[in-house]
Length: 356
Image 1 (spheres, rainbow, N blue to C red):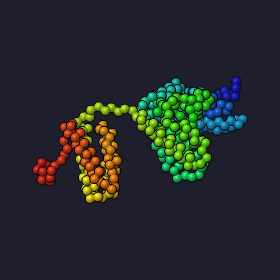
Image 2: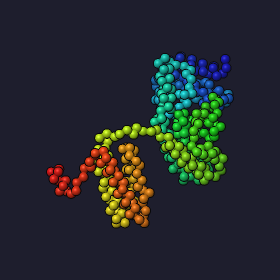
Image 3: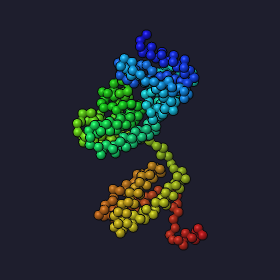
Image 4: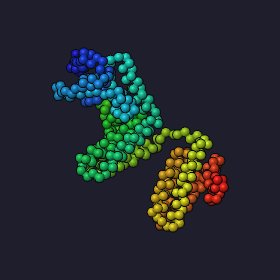
C-alpha cells in the first residue's frame, strides 16, 4: 500500500471513530495540484454534517508535501453548482467516504446541477456578464497603477475573470487564467486546474494579448493588452446573447409602453425647449437620459434600438431636436399601430371636461 492510501485510510478511520455523525463526505479532487506532490489523489476536503464536524480540519506537511484537510459546506457546494464558487470541487471530485447513501446522492445531484447550468445558454450568458463585470471592476484600479508588480497582479486577476467568462460561453469552466491554445488544449488529468480543453471558441486576439501579460516588461504595454482583452471579450459575449422570445406583446405590454412614453414626454418637451434656446448643457443632460430610456424600451417592448446621441452637436442643436422629434413620432406610430391610445389632452379645459 502506498503512502497516499495510508493517509486516506487514516482520515477515514478518524472520521468513523470520532466524527461518525458529524462528517457527511470526504472527497479528493483530481488534478488540484502538481503531479508529484500526491495531493491530487488523496483527500482534499470534507463536508461537515454538524458544527462539531468542522473540528476535523487540519493542515500538515509530510515529506515536504503540504496537506489541507478543510471543510466545505453544502452551501458552498451549491455555490459551486451555480459557478459562484470553484466548479472543479464538484466536477473533479471523487467520493472517498460517505456517511450515507443520501449524502452521496445529494452530492451527485449537485454535480448534475452544475452540468445542467453549463448547458443552459441563458445561465452561461448571465454568468459570463457577471465575470465581465468583475474584470471591469478591477480595471478601474489598474488604470491608475504604475508599479509593474501591481499592474501584473491586477492584469492577471482581470484575465482570470475573462478566461472564466470565455469558458462558460463554451459551456465549460476554468479555474485559472488561460494564456495560450496549447495550455487550453492540454488534457493531462494532473493539471486540470490549469487548462480548459473545451474552450474552443475565443475572442479575437485572446491568446496573443494574454501572452503579452506574461512577456511585457512595461506597465503601459500590459494595460494596453488588458484593454484589448476586455473589448474583445465583451464583444464575444454580447454577440452570443441567447435569442429572446420576440412574440407579439399583449395589450398590457403596450399599455405599459404608453405609460412609459407619457412619463418621458416631458423630457422630449424639455429637449425641444433647450435646443430652441441653444442651451447646450441641459440639452445634452436630457439627451443622455432619454437615450438610456430608449435603450430600455428596445429591450422591454421589443422595438428597434433608437439612436439619439449620434445626432448631438454642441454647435448645432437643431439636429438633436429634429432627431428627438422623429423618434417621438416613431414611438407614437408604434402605439397607434397597436390601437393603444396615449392619455393626452389639448388643454386643461379639455382635461377637466373629461375628468371633471
